[in-house]
Each structure stands twice: as C-alpha cells, then as structure tokens.
Length: 504
Image (cartoon, rainbow, N blue to C red):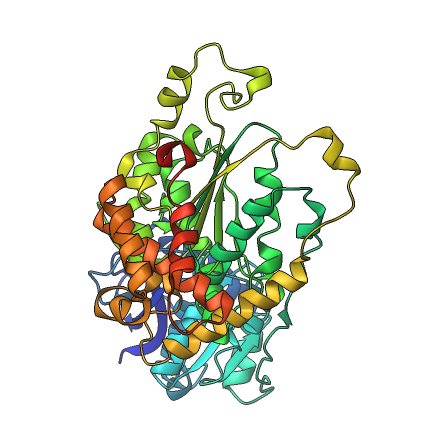
C-alpha cells in the first residue's frame, strides 16, 4: 500500500501542493526519488537514511520508491526532506497514516535528525490553510508561518519530535506568531538644509506612490533626501505587510519570524546585474524590484546602471508585477514599488554649476543623460533639479517641517485614497488609477483643464505624461484636502514635470 504525505513546491510567491507518495515493495534494496527532483531533492535519501539511523530505525531490505506528484512540476530545495521522511515513516507504520496525510510538512534534515530552518514557511502556511491541513515545519521557521491564523502550525526541533507528536507520546503545542515591528527612522527632513522644492516633491511622491527622479551636482543632497523618504511613509497595512513578508520569506529575510510594518527601502548598487534587479538566477528568485514591493526602490547614479537593466524596468513600473521567464521556469512576482532615481547632470557632474562648468557642455550632459531612454524617462511622474547648497546655508537653523509633520500629511492623504479605492482592490494609491476612474477623480475645473490642454499642446506631452500629471494633481489635491482638482494643483503638477529650461 502507498503511504502519502503532503508538501509544497514554490513558483514565485505561490506554493503549489505536492503529494509525496512512498511505496515499500519486494525487490533488491534501493531508495529512489522520482518526480522531477533537482540535486538537493535527490540527495534527500542520504539525509533521511542517516536521520532515521540516528533514531535507531533501520530501513527494510526492500525497494523504497518516493514519487513527488505532480511529476511534471519541478521540485527544488532541501525542504522536501521532512515530507519524504514522514511518508516513509507512515509506510513503515511508525506514525499513523491519517496523521501524515492530514498535514503539510517542510523542513531540511541534518544527519543527526535535527530540523534545519528553510525559506518559504509563510507561503506554505497559506497553502496548508487552503487545503485545511496542519503545517509541520522546523521550530525556527514556525513563528513566521504562524501569522496565517487559518491553520495550525506545529514547530518541531527534530525528526524524533515529529514521531513522538504523531504517535501521541509527546504532542507539540501550536506555534505563536513572531513580533510585529515598526522601526522608526532616525533621519529627519529637517536635517537637510535648503532644498525645499525637493522636500515638497518627496512629500507628493510619498503621498501618491509617484516615481521621482532627481538630478543635480555631486554633493547637492540627492542621496540624503532619498534616505529620509522612509521616515515620511506610512506603515504597511496588514494586507501589504503579509504580501511583503511572503516575498521576504522566500528569500529568508524574516528575522525570527517577525513581520515588519516598515516599508521596504532597497538601494542596489549600479553594478547589480539584471537578475539581481528584476529577478532570476538559480530557481528564478525575486529581485530588488520585488523585494521593494509596497516600498521604495532607490537607484543612485541612475545612468550608470546597464542600459538593459534600466529598460527592463519599464513594464514592471506600469503593471506592478514582473514575469521572470527562464527555460525551465516562468515565475510571476509582485513589484508595486515607488522608483526614486538620482543622477548627475553629466559625467563629471558639474554641468549646471556655473562655478565649475563642464568644458564639454552641453554635449557631455546630452550624452550622459541619453543613457536614460525617452520611454523610461516618460514614466517618472516628478522630475526635479537639486541645486548645490551654499556654505553659508550650513550655519542656518533647521527650517521647514519635520519628518513627523510631513508623515502625518502623507498618512492623511493615503487615508483619503484608501477610502476612495476601497471598492477597487487592484487600485490602492493615485499612481495606480487609470481609465474611467481616473477621469472621474482627476477631472480638473475649467481653468485647470484649459491650462492642461495648453501645456500638452506646447510641450508635446504624450498620453502617458498627460495622465500622470493628472494623477499627481489628484495627489496634491488630497494633500490640500480639496475634493476636486483645481488650477493650482494642475500648475504645481506641471512644474514638477516640465523643466524650467523647456518652459523658457
């Protein structure tokens, strides 16, 4: 008779159910695993054999066959060790078969039988809840899985604990979820001297999740401004925290099973590869854009990134998800992030500084910024120039609103958007709205519409730019608490889209 256990195989943030079938039949002694296993899964037979030996359990002199069904689904990772051992113990009638079939298990086995923590416990718990089964996992991974309250999560320290639990000798108690953390930012906007226009752009970007690019000479404060963005962003909602944590669980980034309500802030170096930014590599793992889901992706020295990497950002910015396509895997990850980019105006960085003017101006700036293609630049809602700060400004007292004050305005604006989009789950912030709904909520008054049409005709705005300006204007109106978009809101949105050089 075939004994069965259950586990999962990961495809992106989804955990696909896998049935582990074990048959012990007469024949020459052998231990084989079939069902499209990778090298780590194939090596599970040696770890399982050693773990059972440490418990004084000898395998019978028969043919042991493990089948991972569905057989055409690739199986990757060491988390298949525990379900294989559970299925084998069930076939040997050491643990009850109904107990093995009523649980979803995952975990890596050491040679001495102890359980090693694995990634993906949170998505696995979601699958276990959907199948109305208990989740069995290593104790070190149980805290994150316990956040799924729709299923019972059992954390075990060793294979012996699993046997004693299923046999009723020493039942294990249900795991408790980890802590919810919210790390306050120690960086305040008031630390930035001057740059009031850039601070306003950060506030608008944070309120509506708009993409922002800053250009300016080296040392003007672009990175300093971006580093203070997390301090004005509202905490993750419970839904957003779960989405973000599922991605972090796949990458093993959850600290002791705790879930953070702080929004991700990722800042990859410009030497990062396409697989590191977009996702890919072995197992088609999520990239930086997915790790920044519901948060911020800050790309300093933006033109220095490889052109192929920059161009791959165009579709994820529009759709909020990325498909990592490989020969043996097609995996979809969410990536609803806010892109904040910083760039020098030219290679040397001093094109716009009259005191240190570039000798190759304006060709140097045109060549350098042309690394950012027109279609990609068109996707930035806000574009600002960050001028250098004079030395005399350093002696001035702190001026402007603190991050705490700005964060309160941003949270109020996002609350307005949450109420506005409560019946449209796919739309959360103004940056997401499109189609008929955009026309309804962003229709400007007569003066604003006239200004918008004149600007579109004079500056040759694309349809995408036209709609993005309307979204920014709607966010500015939300920050002002205005129910309708008016001419001042349109004018300010246009000022962040059209450079002073183009307007002159």
